[in-house]
Length: 317
Image (cartoon, rainbow, N blue to C red; front, side, top):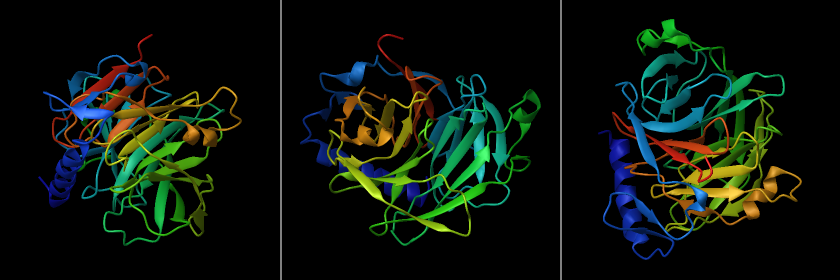
């Protein structure tokens, strides 16, 4: 276990102590959150596989391809190189890929969208800053690699090289933050980053999708989000559904869904909605959650070797 993982586990334990006073998310006789009366319309979370690759030991982000069937992307936390990993819903490795022109200082999340032209893009968030020492962060964008049978034998020693990453650099409008949730609006293209807070609500920042490596955008804070848990701003991952109408967030305890109002003009107003909690299954240090190819399916993992791949289906699925 790395020092970073030990630190995260210590934070998790402290958070559990906080959570003893929580009314909406409580802990019973199992090792994961027991959700209150709503559960956001989802069925019980189920472990559908274990991630088999020994190269994936801290799955910190998750994204499900919208262009290729049964393909899930993940990456490790800091301490790894600039690698992304392809797996399927059986937890089997489909290949190791390296971004050729960037490093992994503290990657925290990954997202994907399918454009109007039918092209799928991957976004990787260089947004972690536990010690709050960094003024500038980055988001990398690449064309989603095509995963073929022959690349399943690739590894960190012999990876498949992706297209060069486009780079977007940004700073926060109100100072330094540590963030672990990166989301991309599949309709408008705006990028959302949600901070991780141990005291008080999390902050939501919106970033225009202008990839110009020599420029630094100042990201405005557009909202604050308070989860029905204690601490209420401990956001560790998130995603936007392919139809742009749902947002899912997670912390170490559970998942939380926000639903866009039918009368809303754009996605930004979704942050005014109240998050509904639901069970995301047994996640020891859970920092990754993603919608499937529709808004009816969710996937989640945790940071460990042989991590469980968890699936949650909506009640009507």
